[in-house]
Length: 302
Length: 142
Image 1 (cartoon, rainbow over the protein chains, first blue to last red):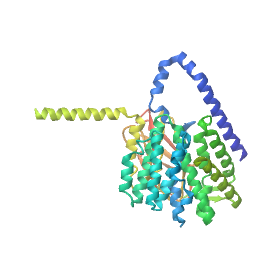
Image 2 (image 1 turned 90 degrees about the horizontal axis):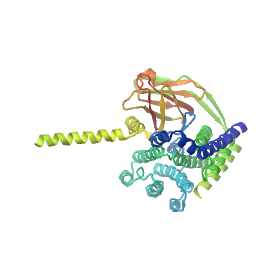
Image 3 (image 1 turned 180 degrees about the vertical axis):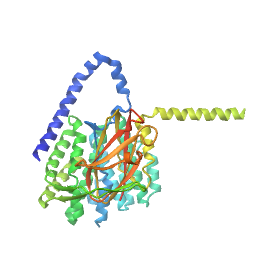
Image 4 (image 1 turned 60 degrees about the horizontal axis):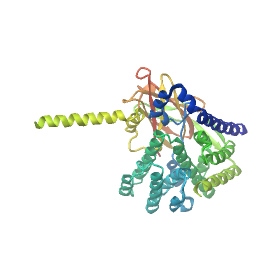
């Protein structure tokens, strides 16, 4: 458990060191050796679209999936777990704007699932404001707002519209050398989603919801991997350190996986994954994770 | 005269469209191709996974798939379907699926009974391309 923490910490330091070396030495060496090639490389539109570490790409599950689980558990709508849309104007740095774009997106998914139309419009407005500020107004444009308004009452269409907008923003950011912003948006969505889940677990003690918390063990690790290359950028270190501490707690969650051969329906192009997973998480650990994510989330929204 | 004008307009529009396609990066073109396979009954996971591949390089996508959910993976490279081979493994590296066994199908659905951590590996079909952008899109339905 501790080993993983130190590995992650070392990785963060290594990335910072590599970034410093690249920053301080890269220019001169490159110019001396072959400035023409470097120029060509900088113009390559795909070069910066990669979110890779040693050839690996990390995914963070959509917050909408967890909102579905919470609603299906019978939890009633709880506005208190959401960020406040009017706070949008208080976010002045790109770091805060990006994290809260993710947080508001998760909130928007949550209120949409509970058919809270008025709240949904407030969150969409907050999302659009941050999207404009971060230069992704093409994803969160007036057309989206109009289509959103036209589809009010049609939950599936609204969820699709919002998810597509976030995907467009993700594509734009990755294509424009802003993988750090893209990673922060994903981080914000995940933090808010885990915050919903821990609050719901506290209120209901629903086994499925508690399991979903334990199932975040690998995602918190993936999230750290996504953010670690930017450890030396302003504000990133604090968030990553907090996530590392959270990861330490998640390392104590016991997950038992048993492989069972999948079944395939080739005609329907469908494979059913039959393997089983059991999650074991003590009440004490659940409390510690709940407390930690609340702290991380409070730092993000305030 | 009218016929000539019409032909000129058609040629001009074709050239503009062709240039627009060329102006897109290979990743964007592949992503556009991939999108048509995430049909409207699936909600996007909000992410755009890409990796540039050369020769026999393999891109690795790390993902958590939640129980009780059906996922659709759409995998593309280049300007036509079937250029990308993708395989899904669990964390113990048991092979769960490969589209190689299904004529490099550009999409496939996965019904997940229990949450699992998985790895999706993608590589170019060597019979089709030597380099290109691998794009993976993920949609889900409850």
